[in-house]
Length: 352
Ligand code: GYE
Image (cartoon, rainbow, N blue to C red; front, side):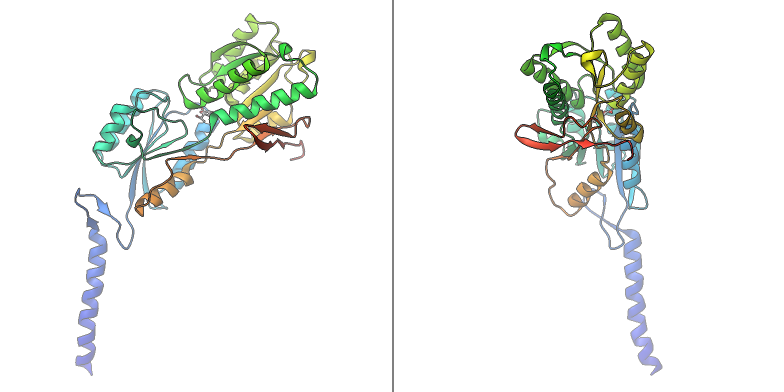
């Protein structure tokens, strides 16, 4: 009997020891990288974030850090590019040297990535682009992209303005707009600016000026101060994000003017993008920002889903667009049509 037990136990414990040993060692593929083991492995991700210019960006960084966490089996190497492409290029080169498993890139501007992305490709490291796009000659230099349709966001706001003005009998030539742009060359700036320019041409609005505000509150305020000094008839300001809008509102109120929808009677209407914070939505509820096209920054879980697909050897969609809302407090416009599609306006109430 005793012998029998021993006879069973020896191979059994050998098996257990082998399993534990194998798991601890992990397995390696040809290029020396660890591959999936029973117990799973830590996936190393280098994330080149472009900066910390806005509330949107903070929420985006937070989402990535929270999702791609050690608890979820990732090690995230985070680099803040401080709005400089050269810093982001250096970060990517460092990630390549560190032999990370994936590179996630939130690029400050669209162009100028061909060389460094070729280097990542040569090293066999997949690159997932988030938020703004990269404009490269060869699309195989990145694995996929996830973000927003920035031109669509812009089209929603200008259609809202068009509907509002039409319903209030305000003629197009009485709409005197200035544009405080985002960081020049960023997809979010390019798409939002294009939507406004196209609408101004189409409807005959008086688009008086476009000045860069770099997506920051401080630059938004400065830009609005100089625009107010130059033009005395501004009645709409199109801010390419909420932080610029906060700054522009400060400048407008400091100049003794009022923000609001009554543009036929001297108020200045503020239009904006993001709607990420309660503060921004409160500006809408208080009629300080008339309309915000939502821009969703919560890309962490989206990147995680892409990595999971890649880990299974599957091919993710090359481009994934996020669905977004349009916020307003004024009930004049309840629905808009963009390129044949209907979008409900999400009306924010004071009570909400
Ligand atoms: O709208 C803005 C941020 O590219 C979508 O960048 C992003 C934009 C966002 O600074 O707030």
